[in-house]
Length: 74
Image: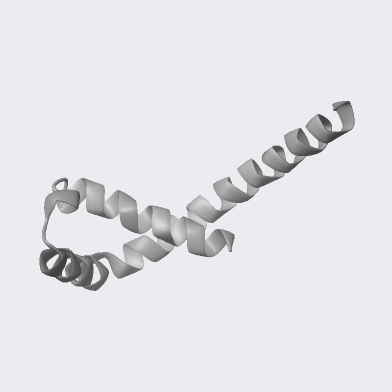
């Protein structure tokens, strides 16, 4: 699940970087942009998502620790 989340974040980073007006585009344009991004930057997205997954895993561990402390103190 963390890998999927990391991959989505990596794709979103690429969209924001290369197509800042992505949210204002029509649906057909967004589909075309997504295809272009995957074609051009697919391997880069894979690398970024692996690094993001490590960061997300550490953040998830911290989040779980805080949640457990909150339930113990409540």
